[in-house]
Length: 233
Image 1 (cartoon, helix red, strand yellow):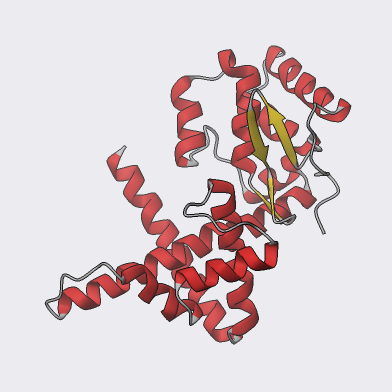
Image 2 (image 1 turned 90 degrees about the vertical axis):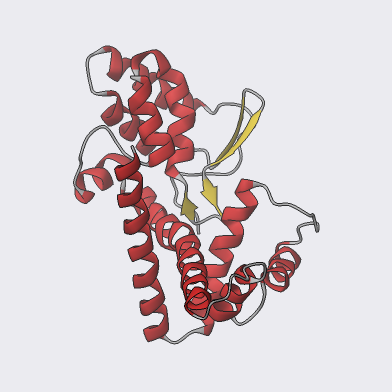
């Protein structure tokens, strides 16, 4: 079930969301740091989806996983003149906030229900994408060790190793289950939803020790990628 704070699609701004945006603007005007005001506003936000300035925003993936940075991007637009450009880019593109908060501080600001949904996004989408990337790296290293430079089927090999099926077979099953049309490409939102579907697919079919091992591998990959980003910035 989706968290109570995030309700069904809104084509026009709801009264509750309008009040949340007003809170954001007033808090910043009174001198509160924009990032803290932003997190408070995320805690007040109600809509799970929204059409805004010609763009469709989906904040809740598959009704369970809260993509908080998409909502942060939307809200940053409301106070763009109050946010240093580098801080905005660091947050939205590199997930690097301007203030260091503890996990409990972050949870308190956005609220426990949204925090739980955020963890679904972290482990069910970001970590699943990282797992696939980590296994692709493993297969690439294995082939280099054997003197092979063949990489054209490497993604399917990774999917087979993790899920027991190739990518297209899994994608077809996902779209059939969700009643989505077959297309040659995926939107970013559909890609995220597919990753969350893969996470649930894997958890349902693997034993607990394998799930734990894969989760550890994925989190190690995330940490490695974050460290690499910091070195290049």
